[in-house]
Image 1 (cartoon, rainbow, N blue to C red):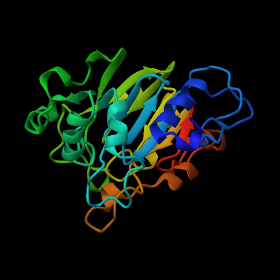
Image 2 (image 1 turned 180 degrees about the horizontal axis):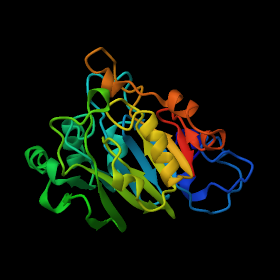
Image 3 (image 1 turned 135 degrees about the vertical axis):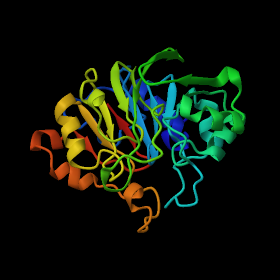
Length: 284
């Protein structure tokens, strides 16, 4: 099958499984390889951004996702694939908290029927999960500080404390909300979800791939810089920006500042930061 006839999901998994190493290429640039060229088998971590905190990640075999929202009406553009395309391939969806831009009810309801994926979610999202109808056998609750092995991946839940306007703590913040630290394709990954900067984030184990949310209600600009300086990730991908229509009432969570974050980093660190485009394939 030619590359242009493959679905985006198939191309993502194929690239992670077979992309040959290239020491002169920037690993955080979209994959432009010639699918017809001879490839040296080598597993890589493949990434694809679906908007907001929604990511697809694969080692070429397992396909996992975080915080998928395919349907909020405020989206600026539709996601880069349909759930009919994604569902049959998806193994695991990690959900960080119950807000609909992260735990989208319609998205999850469709995945229940269009996939056999498992759902890892915090205790704060369990009531919503039951209401939507996630089957008991596919619903895996976790709380901060716990490890859970699911789909062969050992996941550590770190506390997430939801922020608000002016980088304040949201009055409805739930201490059961989670971020996730795990390993895939030999690389450690941290997906923080929605959270201000906490001490345990600064003290986490080494991270190869950090997703960072430079919005007013998350780690914004200077706290994001502080986190990056503390844990020294090899790759930094911005998220939670350019996904939803912004107005004065929602700007604190819809408007991100990735360029401002990049400008505040040392030059050698700037080269490790990627401001992604939705639907592009990235290989690490």
